[in-house]
Length: 569
Image (tube, rainbow, N blue to C red; front, side, top):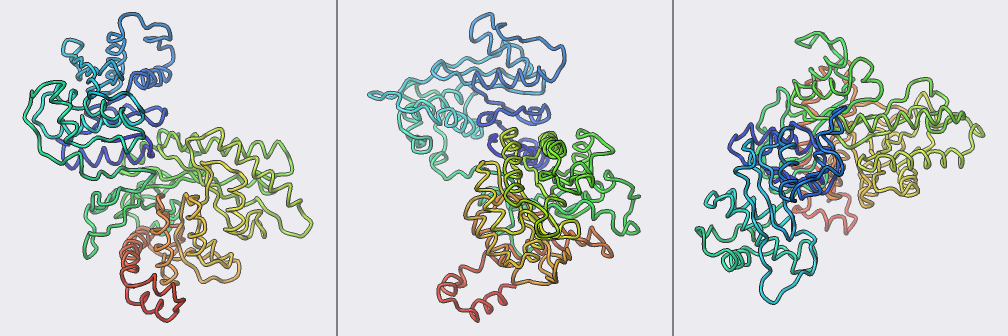
């Protein structure tokens, strides 16, 4: 049972992998929670799509609006009974790939329009009456209970479809009699009792306890639920098994690696390396790689967004994020350029990146500007530049509330000696002033080292504010103003362990991106090394607390901390 309050590409991964694993797995799609359009390919994978009446209409109109001249359904063209209108909309949705469409109608019951069978086999089911001496208290979550109960009854395979709808209706009726979405979820015994009282003992009583077991929901982004599938979500040529010693604490996050590094060592590639298409194809050969972060507009000069998405699908990869790389004409600044017209153009490019992210199926835009800063004292008005950045990000966040905008700070480089936002503390201050729920930070380990920071502490600081949207992993020698882009944990293994520990502790839910520079090294093998390195650090970090780390920290015991670190590494 999938829902839409997580990024669409996570659902797409689950859909593909589930059907690949077992074609008999039943997949149900709850379409509530987000009104963004849904893809035809997603509908085709799902056995059941379960909207309410307004969600059904919204889905249908989103498809019709994509087809110029299509006027099959117009506002006001709702002749016929309510049931006939629902069937009409469901049939249209089926033309776009939906199979079985189950529509909830609140107090009026529900309608199931089976796949490709017209309306002769449509199942109408009245709503279940409330238990005696109860009334409607709070309808929040009733539809969720209905869908969950329908999924339970359907999966146990001892009820007819109508009986599954009755069972679901009983669960939904119970849910409205209590306050709150979660507290109102009924027990299995309560559902069975109301089901029997309202509809009679029409079916075999199914196994006890199913609805009382704890259910984990995918709740944010690329994080897989705890105690969920323990196998790797390998992509491309990747193995489907995890080559760690055991699988009780598998890293649940997706892995991406720097796309531009696929240009390195072309002599080691089995096929020619000419353009970004070839880079994506080469990333598809990396064992354990799941996602690709694209640079915008750098990676979109030679193909369309649709072609990029198809290239990902061909390699069984997904988009992780779209990363801003403003063209060199913004050398005097992007969001802080002295020319208002140039600032406006930079903002519009940022919005275009957000549209691209939507079309690729991801929900994050990472903004790193090589040019938003200065070189000398008195060169810029610091307050003015700060305000310009705040205003620019507010505009972007408000224009695309479904997209996360993530600032990647950097203290210095050859393009800009001092960046306007030069540290984690300054970046967090900026995010707080922008004050938008979809504004956060991406922290690059190398950039934090350049700024003289301890990456673990910086991650803890941003993580506690729930503003850590992205992490870029690498390592370096920490020479002044140098960004080495070395393999993760290769120079500072204890620091790398603390980075992963803090990410686990703060509940990080983004993906891992390796911002490294192989150059003279095989970029495929380098990425595979990074992936395995993080998996081992993840396991090691999971053992620290049980080894007494909290007591060590309580006592500020440096020697004991080093001893534990050495043991787990």
